[in-house]
Length: 101
Image 1 (spheres, rainbow, N blue to C red):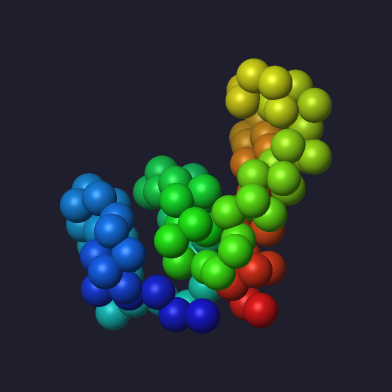
Image 2 (cartoon, rainbow, N blue to C red):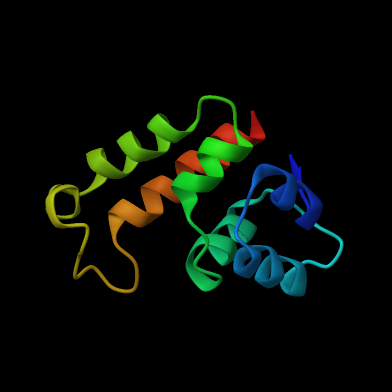
């Protein structure tokens, strides 16, 4: 799956996310694990929004992956597992798996 700034705009992404995405990937990018980590960690894009608006039927799978990964995060959405908690990593991996088909 390839994502471009135009695709984000059409899907209704906020201007800040589109601008950050376009700065990092002016020609768009393929969905890879590394690019997902950059988008959702470094650029702070919303993985649930992306799943809901860029993947067919993916949002609940992404939410469930996070909820099943870390009991502490499931309740509080915070974790002290450095540098990123199991909750975030599971949601990123779920998005990647759904996007690659």
